[in-house]
Image 1 (cartoon, rainbow, N blue to C red):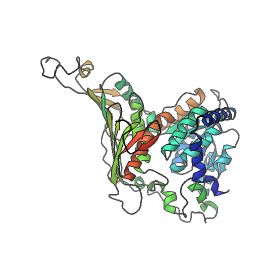
Image 2: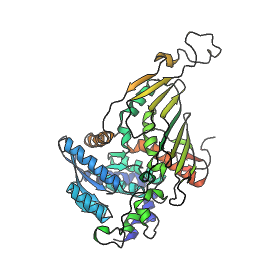
Image 3: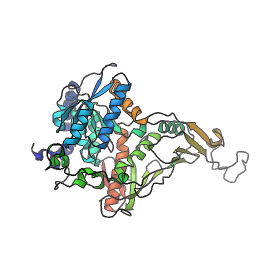
Amino acid sequence: MPTDDFGRRDFLKRASSLGAGVALASKAIAKNKSSISSSRVIGANDRINIALVGCGGRGRSDARSFAKYGQDNNNACQIVAVCDVYERRKRETAERHNAKAFSDYREMLEMPGIDAVIVATPDHWHARIALDSMDKGKDVYLEKPMCHTIKEAKQLVDTTRETQRVVQVGSQTTSADQWWKAKKAIADGMIGKMIMSQGSYHRNSIEGEWNWPIDPGAGPDGKGDDYIDWNMWLGPAPKRPFDADRFFRFRKYWDYSGGIATDLFFHVVAPLNICWDKPQYPVKVMASGGKYAFTNDREVPDTFHVLAEYEEGHSLVLSSSMANSQHIPGLIRGHEGTIIMVEHGKFEEPTDNIILRPELVRPPSDPAHPDAERLPAPFPGYKFGADEIKIPVEQYDMMQAHVGNFLQCMRTREKPHLSVETAAHAQILISLAVESYRDGRVKYWDEEKWKAVDKPVKA
């Protein structure tokens, strides 16, 4: 196929065409009709047919999770098609699931009977494949990060609304119980006004540093199973000669990934947006860090920190390193209490309970305290008791819950746990953090124009 089909200019034309009001309206109507007419209504007992794009480690894991869910739930779903540019991965995954194999996802989307598409490619392909899938009337399980650029995030939000497709972003931790219990506790007033949220993602291992194995002999000159369609893999990214490190370890390079921000912090920021009273975009983002331990084998930093501010008057603090594995607790601080969602700090691992620790500002029996006039009474910390409260968390397989939530929403047409709209708030934060780090300056968010700017939007 002509590689020019995947040029950046062609990709960005789509974004600019969304800008004009009349053009956008007519396109939305046409897209909506096309999407609905090319999709089927899924009954309660119908088996859902799933196609996978991207048969790397994450894609194969997703396919196994969907297959397991189908096997454990009366054949609720099955993998019927797989697509990859690497012949070995494509063949092995197709054989495992007895599925049809494709090298071009666009050809796969023409296959009759596909209801949903799993997008598990490198990050720079996420948005385009998801957009094309929605245009073809498919629901989408879109691996995190939901996209590679801010412009793509806007396209995904708009297209999801226009086509009325169900899109679940694949940060499976958002289907764990602790975030929803924390959300209710905060809504019930258990911490008062929210002041600051914090989280981390630390690890220290060979594969944790994205040093995944490189298959010898694999590449565009490889024969049979060793063949990789490098031009197709590059897609909208800048054209470069084949580099096995870029292909097998893409998260180390800016062209295809945002490094720690997009790979790890998405699993922190997405559940925090669920806990908050409503998902929010930051107004100010600052990022720092560097290549402190791994200096010569990557473009992205191995240590990365983010500080963000929100218009409603609270901050977010994130820390991460790929050279040290000690986490900090994941929590949300309020003026009247603190909710600790993951005391061990590992946002993707189970926890037995969430913890409420009230802020005991003054003894309730001391109305003569000099600050009594300015403090609320009765203080909510006492309304819920002066002692630490542990709220039990239901234990289950969060990945199976995330898959099940997506499939259920395909039937009901409800919004899934991590909808595109909620995920966009996390995506904008991490995309701004990447821009801040790379530009060496504070970034501000202009929501009206949907772009990063270098000066505050409001005085």
